[in-house]
Image (spheres, rainbow, N blue to C red):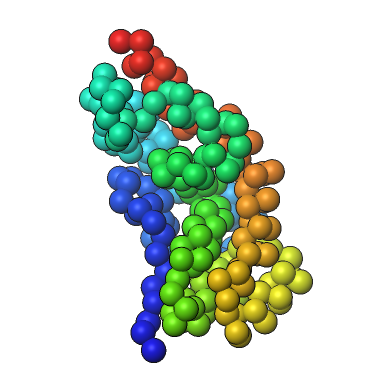
Amino acid sequence: MRAAAISTPKLDKMPGMFFSANPKELKGTTHSLLDDKMQKRRPKTFGMDMKAYLRSMIPHLESGMKSSKSKDVLSAAEVMQWSQSLEKLLANQTGQNVFASFLKSEFSEENIEFWLACEDYKKTESDLLPCKAEEIYKAFVHSDAAKQINIDYRTRESTAKKIKAPTLTCFDEAQKVIYTLMEKDSYPRFLKSDIYLNLLNDLQANSLK
């Protein structure tokens, strides 16, 4: 049987972003120690000038702004749409990356990683389903998973049973739980965050040039 790797579409191609070097390093620490680590390990980019950070994250932010016909240009109107719903944010490739960067700053990037892995899984060929389902389960759902997602016991057990005879929908229940968690918890904070507001303000300023 061919092995199948979990792919996270394009998210690793944006500079300065996204995946933790060692996802196990936060395991097994006390609450106070975790707080200390969060202070010490705050991504360096958040201490940089925001324009420089955004320019490194979206290479065509300023140079492409004057050419509104380019498909690669991110517009202020497009970024404003991200505030309408989490669905619209995640439907946009750049939106996924910016939101992922925000989640990384909160040490909860496993949520977007799992959600994207599920989206990719739904496109899997039938002969690859068993391998891919097992890999996603071990990476995110298993009780000892390195990037264990925050789902209830019933959903975890239900998912474990479903992957024994995997279908394209065997992660749907868990994915819905994580989507709801992001929608009610992380997404509202994202809309008030510097990373989102500075990006929007910068794009609006450039559109007036």
